[in-house]
Length: 158
Image (cartoon, rainbow, N blue to C red; front, side, top):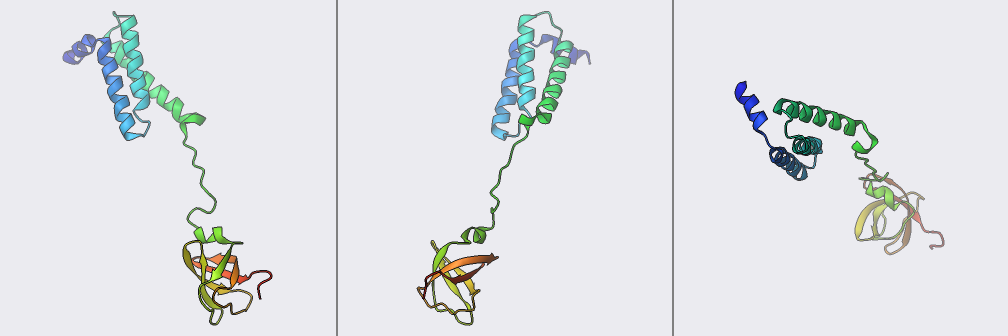
């Protein structure tokens, strides 16, 4: 125990700055913010040790621990400590984004089933209006059910 106390008392300000820099460097690599505040606490303790060279190692260690814990808790409970995740309402529901869009029938529909070309994708489709669209006919997406688009003839289409 005495060896630990001697080591703490022998720490110079640059030791604390090196610890702070190391913790912040690890934080930059890990991107978790778990080591950011302990790193800043070590830098502050180093500054205090620089300004007050007679500060004992035990006091520095207690200050470091207290600052690290307190600043981490305050940060995590503050509104700035929470990552806001704004997601698109239709994320992972690509077919829903096509509702209302126009596309061409990729083939003649048989029994109300066929395919439609939208952008660069060929989608399975079902005619909801009971029609049998022909290849090349313009269709409007009325709804989506998973990977199957429900389509109807476009207004003004023959």
